Image (cartoon, rainbow, N blue to C red; front, side):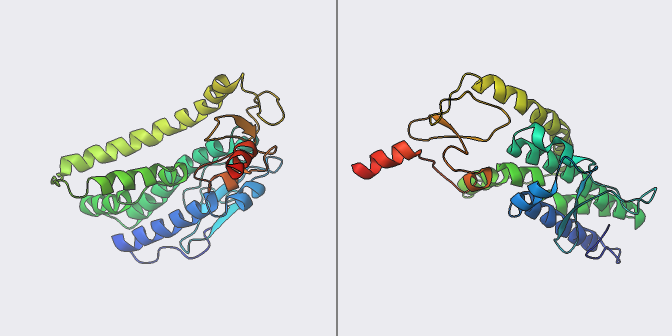
Length: 251
């Protein structure tokens, strides 16, 4: 399963390079190649996993047959949840599990190569300087960059080892809570929009369909009614429904 090469040297930098390549492959699957990834995760197929490789290539495939496997395995059966929740929530759930898998692979190599406390700490700090897959997929990473840039001219405080430990504990806590938060999004979304009507066809909100809200009139529409797909919506900064677009053109 481990295509694209593996860690052959034993330095912290080599393990981090392996982590970064696998991470980039997973992020590519969940963002740039999201339509292809979505199609490959057919719920009618057997248990599928999302693999990222050191050469930044991703693959959806069956789990390794070896017992125990050569490397820690990604989350099993990601395809089964695809049609049971909103696409963005499903992608966020896959991202959370991918973060857990990437860390497990990196620290598997750390244990295998006999990293001491100092090496493990340095490896974690290098990994922690990168946004998680979950933060990239959900847009949290962009928000954090904006916050950092707004305070770039402010005073900079020196971080201690204790603060690093707190960051590590906080990251693991966020990841453990993230799955519960994502799984409740489906129910909350249905409660919030249960009485909403599509501005085009007039039908009720359905949680298993993609909807988009006009930023001008604030009406909700089925994506299919206004010909907007989830992938296309990701690149729209301000959505205007056909009615609002026509009004603006006549002014």
